[in-house]
Image 1 (cartoon, rainbow, N blue to C red):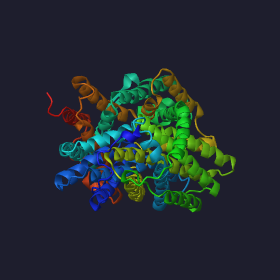
Image 2: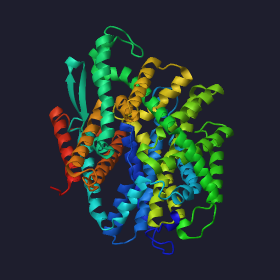
Image 3: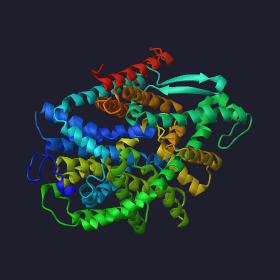
Image 4: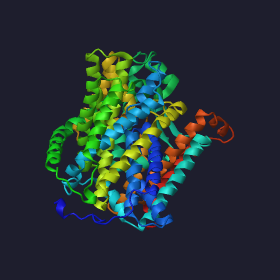
Length: 624
C-alpha cells in the first residue's frame, strides 16, 4: 500500500531542509519546551506534545517574518524542537527521586554531569533504535499505523498560509501564561490557591489559579479530566472524611500522632500527606501495571512484527526520501553507549547490566514506537513500562546483593535510561511520520533528533537542579508524582518499610475502577495528586466540553484553543524556570508584594475566571 503513496515534496525535488535557521530555532525550542514540560510534568505528572506548537512558531518566523516558503525547513524545526519535550518527560518520571533521597540525607545530590549523561544515553538510544525500525513502522505500515500526532503535525504544516494566524494564538497564550505566573509566584500579588474549608464534611475544596492546569484539562478533554477529578473526589470527599471520622484518637502508621491531632494541626492536607498519598501511589502503580498487562499481547505481537518487518525491509534505496543513517554508525553508536554505561559511575551497573539496559531499551522503544502509531503519545503506557523496569531492576539488584544506596541509585539510573529511550523513540517515530508525509529526508531528521537530544540533555540537568533548589521535588509546588512513586517502589522492595496496607487499598481501588470499565490510570493520578490540581484541570475539561457541545466535537475548536493552551503552558513553564533562577540568587523575596497588596480567595477566584474566559475566547474565536 505504501508503493502508491506520494509525499508532498517528491523524492526527486530538493528544497531547503537542514539550514542554520531551522537548526538554531529547533535547538532553542528544544530547550524551551523541554524546560516547560519538565516544570509541568513535575507539578501534575503529565506533559504535552511540543510538535505542533514548535511547527506553528517555526511557520510564524520562517514563513511570515522571513518570507521563506519551505515546509521541510518548518518540519526540521519541529523535529529538533520536540526532542526536548520527550527527553524531559522521561527524565522527570524517574530522576527527581535522587534529589528527594539527597534531601532525606540518604545520598549526595546527583551532579549536573550525572543527570546530563543519563539523559544523553537514553535520548541517543531512543533515536538510534528508531533508525532500523523506520522502514518497518513508518513506510511498510503506512495506512495501518495512523500515528495521530505525527499526521496532525503534517496537516498543520501543510496548512500553509494559516500558519501565521495560528502562531498568534501560541504567542498570546505564552504572554498570558507568563503574566499570570509572574503575578502569582513572582510578585506574590495573587493567592495561588482558592480554598474552601468544609468543616461539616471534615475536608476542603481547593483549586489552583495556574493557566497550565486549565490548559492540561482542555488539551486532554472532558473525559480524562473527569477521570482525574473523580480520583480527587474519592480521595478528598470519601477517604479523608472516613479517616477523620473513624480514626479519632488512633495513631496510624506512618503518622506519629493520632488522626484527630493530625487533622486539628494540619487539616485535610495533613491527612492527605500521611495517608492518601500512599493510597494514591498504590493506585498509580497498580494502574500502570494493569495498562502494561492489558497491552502485553499487543506488545509481544507488535515487537515480533517489527523484527520481521525489519528483516523483510532490508533492500537498499538511494531515493532522497528513503535515506536513513548508516546502520554501521547506528550499531557503533549503540555499542559505544553500552561501554559508556558500563564505565560511567552515574549508572552503577556491570557490563552485563549495561547490555541488559540496551536490550530492554530496544524492546520498550520498539513497543513505544508502534504503540504511539496505534493510539498516540497520550495513551502510550510508558509509565507502566517504567514501573515494570524499576520493579525488575530493583528485585534483581537486591537478589545480587546490591542493596542500600548503591542499589537504589542503580535502579533509578536503569529506569531513567530505559524510560527516556522509550519516550524518545515514540517522539522520533511521530516526527518521522510527519516527515514521510511531507517528503523530508530521513537521515536529516535523524541527525536533527540527535542534535535536539544533545541540547535538551545539556539543559535538563540545570533545569532540574534549579527547580529543586527553588521549590523542592516532592513538595506541594513540585509534587513529582511519578518519581516519588518510583522512589516508594524501590524503598519498598529494598527495605520493606512501606505502609503496605495503604498501598494495597490503593491498588484494589485501581483494580475496582478498571473492572467498572473506566481507565484506572487518570483516576489514580487524580487520587494521588492534591485536589487543587485535578479540580482546575477539570475546569479546562468543562470548557472543552462546552465548546464541543456548542459547535460539534469535529469543528468546535478550529485548533486555536489547543494552540493557545500550548502557549499558556509554555509561558508558565518558562517563567517558572526563570523564577527558580531568581529564587536561587535570592531576588524573589525583594519582589514579594503580598505585604502591600491584599490577597485572598476572591482575587484567586477572579484570576481563575479571567484565564478560563481567555481559553474559551481563544477556542471559540470569531464564531457566534
